Figure 1 (cartoon, one colour):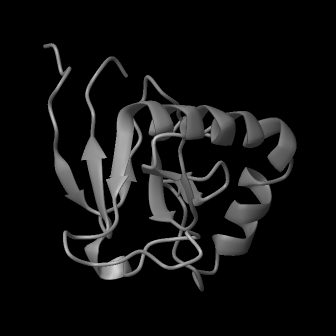
Figure 2 (spheres, rainbow, N blue to C red; figure 1 turned 60 degrees about the vertical axis):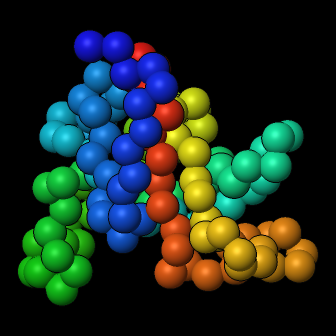
Length: 133
């Protein structure tokens, strides 16, 4: 299926599953999910994109915070962030900027005057731009 030109709007509060052909957990091989987008940059064409470290992602096996096994899980999964996770973070940022565009303001509203981010998180949406994953 050719996805070029297909757009799909996704509510920004919905976690974004990462395709397995992009990346899986380097520790246990489980799926990864982007659960929060936190920082934005304007690209050369004046479009919003997530900044290189402006997103949080995790392994789907992560226990809830407060779960008795959470600390042990975290220690095991993040023992060497630079070796295990940094390359995945870079890869995911490249995939996000290649395959997604972010529409952060609805028509008729204004961006923050310093250009540092969207005027209102209420209207953030993710747009799939198609192409090969």
